[in-house]
Length: 251
Length: 375
Image (cartoon, rainbow over all chains, first blue to last red; front, side, top):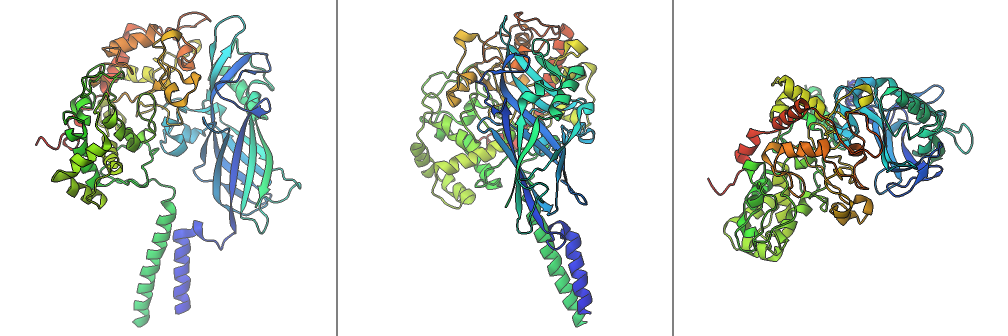
């Protein structure tokens, strides 16, 4: 009888608090650190003149984007973060942004997958909480949804006065998923070792890629990009090589 | 039977424990929501931080309300916070510049106090990082209430009313500047406006007129003439249902083209010391905007019509002019041309109709926010 009761109680505990139960699979946490770069150098806001692949001179005042639906993939395991929406913001004081995902089952993850932007389900739901709060200046309006990637600054044409440089990329068809290999010092080592409880994944965000490859952007024609065909070219650019995993540390 | 009782007791206590564990781990994620003092609709979101050492509490809110209307907080006992922040005018005073106790006029328009729970920078130039920090500044400012904190504390301590009220709110009869600030901040956080016509529309209880609906759409749209998308370009700075600025760093501060290079006011530059912040001021909430004339940081515009005319065709260029204003027009613009929105008369009227929708009569008549000494 006592054994039965204990069993019943334990199962009750698991049902009510299953996510915290340490007995299922050992869990750890993964910290993601983003470093913002322009042409390989730390991104400076408001003051520094940069030159894009087309030879246009410009400055950046603000840069932020949504990283959502984060998944970690191993051969036989998949971790999907719940309510996964992260506003990756190059803040005024730091060229680095980070967030930590907790309660990640320790598996031999080899790949990281996520969307750039906000998926169509959430894009029109006007979810006001956390990173999706409109007070982050990433919501257009209820119909159009969110800006997925925002870059604002100035463009200095050679023959006329300064213009605004505004890249606001969004709309459902531009929501794209990106897969990055989790490269280790020793190839294919697990993200977690048996003894480790935390891992740090460092990601470089190379902004020049937004304007460079495969589509070279010409600011004289496209200093303002919001929606439309040109935005798709920018999406093609930033989904191919703007984000790179540069190191994975296991502790 | 014994086993049964043992079972039930154990079950109850374990369920209790498991509940406790769950709620304690969940609370790390959720911001505590101390209703009903902070009563707000879901669409305002939960992006606010209440200082951990000043959790919302009725006795502190009530004390804060008294202090807000307390003239002893000024040097000659003639002014309170409410002198320049009057409820009937959505906590403004209707003047271009307010006059302090010594008859000296300030240089900034008194800001409306509304929905500050969702704000992180205070004053037109963002020089305070919390309401607690903000609250003590006008009291001491020589051109405003001109009262030393020491003097204010002495005056309050000498009353019959306040030592007991502070004891109730903070556990000690000894009044401190910190606790004055905490109480004032708590009262200000309860000043939430969420029953305007626009709110009723968002809650589905009011059907806007065609003109109001056009106004809402124009307000929140950045114009893109290439695809025929018309917009008033207001929502680029006045975000979402709160119609207030970006909450990250100083991204909610903008140069909105009021002045040219030579007479640009320092604004945010006073705080950051950065020349690229020259002429930038806080984008305030537009809640109750029809009640808070005159407009802009220096109260230069008498009416909302004047404000709209400014944005439509009187933007003055300067180095720090916001790129989203520089690059906004309903007609294709060419380098070197003046910045103009090219709104039609009908569109301007529609935007004004939307701004009128932001007036909340319940808020300006709410007993809980009124002077507690005049009952």
